[in-house]
Structures are given as C-alpha cells and as structure tokens.
Image 1: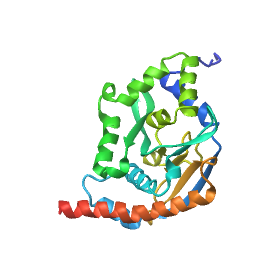
Image 2 (image 1 turned 90 degrees about the vertical axis):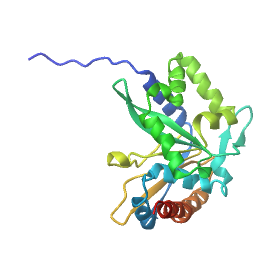
Image 3 (image 1 turned 60 degrees about the vertical axis):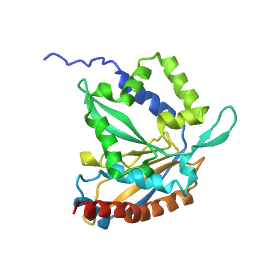
Image 4 (image 1 turned 90 degrees about the horizontal axis):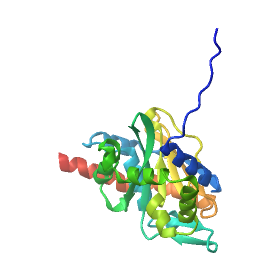
Length: 254
C-alpha cells in the first residue's frame, strides 16, 4: 500500500490578513467579562416585525447607544509617538460577515458609522450588502485585497503605523468597537483575541430567550468594574430603547 503524503498549500491573500490580524491582536492585554442577558420580551417583539431585524444589528445599535454615556468605548491606547489615549468623537462598529469568494470562505469587515443614529432596517441593509451584493461592489473587500497583495514588510508597516500612531485612521479602518458571533452556525465562541478596545460576542439563545453576552476589553483602557456596568446597562438598553423600536415598527405595520 502506497504511503500517503501531505501537500504544500499556499497562503491565500485573505489568510495573510488573518495572520497579520492575529499577530497584532496578541499584543492587546485582553480581559473578558460575561453576563447573562434576559431578552424574552425583545425576542418576542422581534418575531412579529417584518423584515425581522438581525441580532447583530440589534446588539450593534444598543452598544453604540451605550457609548454616549461611556466614552471609554470610543477610546484607544496609543503607544506612539508617546503613550496616550485617543478618543474618537463618533461610533464605528465593525461586524464580521462570512461569504464565499472564489471557493474560499472569507470574513469581511462590515462597518457601520454612527449606528445609534440609524434604524435597525438601515443597519441590516448594510449587512445584507456585504453578504449578498457582487463582491466587486463591496468596498471593504477591495480595500482589504489591495493591502493583502502588498509585500509582507509593507503590510506590517501599514498595520503598525495605523494601530499605534494614527488614532483617527485606526477608527476609520478598524472601527471603535466590534461584534462577532458564530451563533448562526449553531455554536458559540468562548475565547476571543480582539484587536479593538471592546468587542462583544455571544452564543446561542436558551429556552427562556436569554443568552450569555461576553465583552472582551483592553485592560489598559477599561477596568473590570466598568465592563460589568456596561453589560448591565446593555441589557437595559436592549429591553428599553431597542424593544421600543421593534414595538414601534410592529404598530406602524399593523
């Protein structure tokens, strides 16, 4: 019987960016806080709204609303040219959207600027654009691939300068906070290596329409007590402002 041999596979342009991302993310001293969120009323209201808002869009808007009271959520630690914090004046949420391009599963950066000022339907339309429109019409993909095709030294220099020296460009390219989840694929993440000051991620709903929400945060910017208060307030915003928007859309449709 012939012994099977392994094979060499090239690193695709997209995977190069993932490698870059992981290398820089590992430099962030990350701590994770967790809270169970009871969202029964919101889950029921969401069921009767058409089109049904995505949970990613719901959490993005709720977290952005919170940042009006927690400026730390728009803040980054910048080590160069001297150690300081940069605080962005507005929110930019970065969401991960998976799709298949040329036979490869990739994850696109889907960014929404000022999500707290947008309706849930507007946020979901931006998500849909990244998921379904022709890939050559998705600006974030074209920008990512342009960087991915650069030599490694140039790529790493762009990453380093943007993340460590240029606060405004950092927020423009990477966002002020992130959201990621694999709940749509039937599972949940228990650990994350985030690049941003704050990233929220969540698992599956239980029978009571609740879930475990996790907040991964840069400990140089936030303390654990602040992270705990943010998660408590996030539940309140979801069951207040976001619930009211869903109920208002239901009444308008009726």
